[in-house]
Length: 512
Image 1 (cartoon, rainbow, N blue to C red):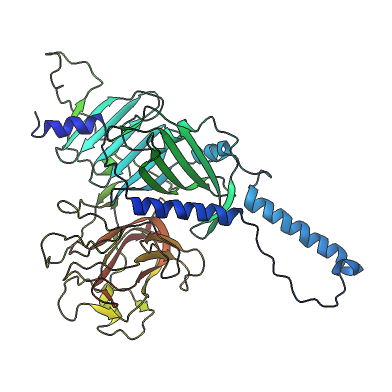
Image 2 (image 1 turned 90 degrees about the horizontal axis):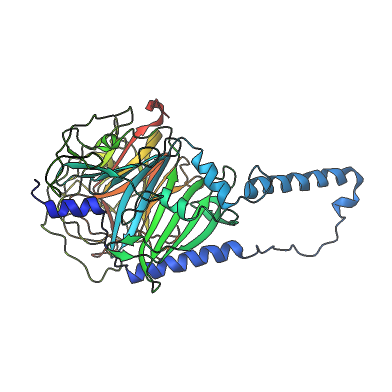
């Protein structure tokens, strides 16, 4: 019935992922996680002032009660910050329940394996017992884990949507990881206590969990151990991020995942809101069919439920490619593999535009070697002379003022794509503070050794092409976007042809 029936059956049975980990990347992640927990557990050093003859404040009658009040107030604030409004340290069960009370949970999942980073976007509606996932190849998944117990799998290659029965307590094995399955695995570990630490500039509590999990498979390989670190806001007790590792019986990491979590006011009503075309062939395996045993079920029509939440492809005009193929540079560590074929369309909410177009740009290099900073947001992505900016050597950054707070879904950057160069220590941040001192959200960082002083990053190096580098914005809010780089494989200089920021002004979002 289909031109590629073998691929279709493989997709229906479960989404397969490459399971070969990158050893250098895995080791760097391990060291970073250990350093984080060691730093959080280490007692703070208190600097003592030089010895002086002083009168203790507590001995001054007028100040005695004021000192006591300040001490009590500070203690109360500390209890609120670290233990939450309940007055005690939050347990994993409390975090799970607080998370499940939210109308919607949105997670951007970065999966690292074999020199590749695959990105998925997940939406969870715990009250309706529905979940959805959008894959980086344009595929879509839907789960109804309530009364209907159904799963939907859409393949953009053959434009077919399969509806099947959902079996098991979670959302199915041998497939993409999801929060429902993870919560189900750790549901009995209610009293796990968290450890105070820092994440993305904010105070969080980290819950380290692990459990043997025979039966789950990744690319046909059995998973023996699931390790997870949940990061939760100590005040709301909701999940803000997570790290997940799937390990085999020898302890080797099959996949490592980074989850960035937020709580939007709305989400998809069905997989059709995730860009699945209404013309897709629908095969309903939950119905009984009359015919030859083992024959392909007859495609059946199905309604297309949609809502005001709707993802559509971004309209991105690409420049002319200057070379064919993407050669690998063996001298560059942690270099992502070239994509086979063009980049799949990036889906974002309706009304998303390039909010950086024509906006003012400043830089750490006030006097560029070549060009002017306004070229970075003028819409010209070609490599012709007069179309790019060249900044001085060493770490440099450019800052784009969007001139209003926006919800950012993607940042697309072209450093210089005339040659297949790799630019080093690329970091992209979003903030409301023009000085980038408080409230900074980092959405991309491949600076593995913190050369620019912003912390070690986990993202991979990449080769410049005419497609540019599309960075998932994760729906963060902010007015300013800052991009760092630190030379390239050809020289120590830094270049920018164009930066596009795709988002929506918060003032224009009616459902926010």
